[in-house]
Image (cartoon, rainbow, N blue to C red; front, side, top):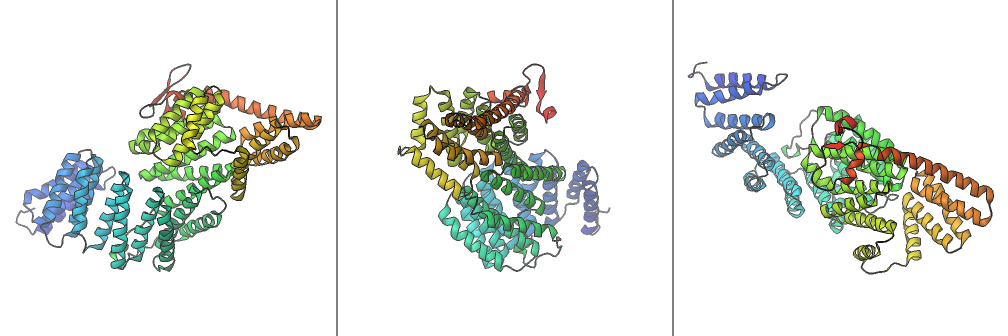
Length: 571
């Protein structure tokens, strides 16, 4: 190509070659980079120079590990494009990718001023202004600075309103609502969700965009109810959410672009939304004590995730997978399937090994699950060590309380830890207002009102036990029989075991020999099942995870009798 040819000809030729190599199967990135670098030999005008630096930076960032060279090209693209009038796309894309690269290199303090500058100069370009606001808000969220993130989302919502984009205004407000829920600022959540509901219902636009806003809105409503333990009150919302996702799956993606550039956003791909709806359904089923239903929806969601992960490496999919596994592990421990729970805990370990951020966000939950497993196999010292580790790793108030109450149950079972138990109870309930019988009756009333089956079953069997010890056999029987029925429906193996033991003693005391024999037989069956599962779990190489209390999850687990077994071979 002649150096003196019109710039378009040599430039378009090199660009065509570069794109051909980039999209080859497999991509020939080295050749693509050579073609783009050749552009500089022609001393191109500033517009072509800046765009080529952006293309090189983007290719190197996304397809190679050469982040220093990528950074150099992106910085040049950002610097040159600011001197070229009407060059918004190149300028702001360079700022966006460069700040992503900074975050990847843990240079968050370089990313923030860059994004602030880009936000400041992009006010005449609605799409980029909104996108950069979302990006900086996400950066603050990852740093756990939710106040700054909420402020930015508020700014974005007002900007979207001014430029006439009610759709993107709703996205900003729903994102802010999500962060307010995370911060437990419930007083601010209610009016915000009410406003969002009105905006979503009134917005007339692309049906898929409208339904995806409704899914976002309903997911927030459902999680808000579940956070408060209101599993009965949430049912209408959950039903609406499930209908909404069915509607979305029947709609075709229209290729018609919105007329307002500020509307060029979508919350999640519909396949991801589908998994998310399964996930909140699992959360609901588990809290309500419908564990077989939780199992069914977990299986569906995990199958869908496996398919999606073959084509999509989005980190949110691994997050969904870990949360689903965390829920199903708790279900397994309740239903008496400890060996399966342990194998699923090791799957969570494996997922966390692949992503340090995932591990940071889920380490406390992982150690809590190991603590619960340790209790189920009667390894109380390990349970204490796991819960102590989890407490060290969490700042989340509800999780902290959950861990401390489980640690208290370990001290109670050990029987000789009164001092530690009292100091723990002091931390949980500093006011000492523990009138146990009224307290349990109150629990029963609350759990009954919201269909919290497991809580109801546990409260009934405990009250039944108290009445039995007090010698009030009739009242004890009135509690234990419904506890047994409910526990069978869940099914909750430990409450079934406890209830059958009480029924055996109760019927013996009441002289009901046949019923006492039947209860004894039931107790024997439950004990056998639990014992077999206990032996199976403890003989797995993953059982050694109970000793892990420090650092990232172990890559390999030493088998108890034999060679080292890698996690991969066990899954």
